[in-house]
Length: 270
Image (cartoon, rainbow, N blue to C red):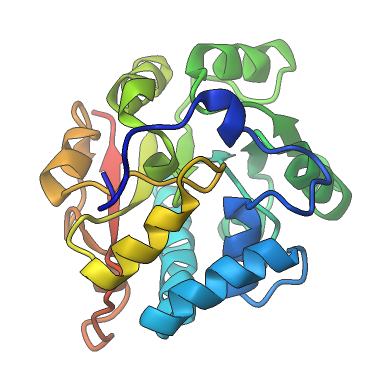
């Protein structure tokens, strides 16, 4: 858990309230760091606090986005033609379908988020072409989510699929059982499927962990975890090289370290 956290806030206090300009939202903080405009003063204030102690945070946000692109390319190159972006957040190009369709123009992509405003943005900006869909769903209820995908004939789980969870799992508290969530997804995925995750590391600098403690009780509350804990989430998957490492190590060998450490990993279901 992040230093200073006294325990998880009730789920109700961490659920996003549509159009509430006073409620901090993780998707909008991330949007601000990526240079987007779909954020409010409260999100900008938190981002600036984080940037004051870790000015390279915007760079890390782009490293993380680049990791997503790399993971999608790996899956598409391996023949995957179905993609689920869980906790998709506010659209920022390049998006999953843009990356996947550079390799396979017919790729089907479903963007899923539990924030109605985010889903509306995705629906308006992304879901304009056949095979691209935005769906309201909560990763903490994986069985319901997967049932929706099947019910609406969006994804064929009898065929390999790639699931991305980019900067999502550290918003799932320990008592919300993140390992069980991933196990539920894994068990429904066909052999040959891919899972890509990024996760905030407890090895991040104490300064940034103290700032993040200010998100407690909001939908942006985080639980950063160790490399070993993050790797355990991928039980049952074959880890691709270089394994569970800072995201920039998936990109190029000459990229700098950052004081906030964001781990990245890609696994394949045998």
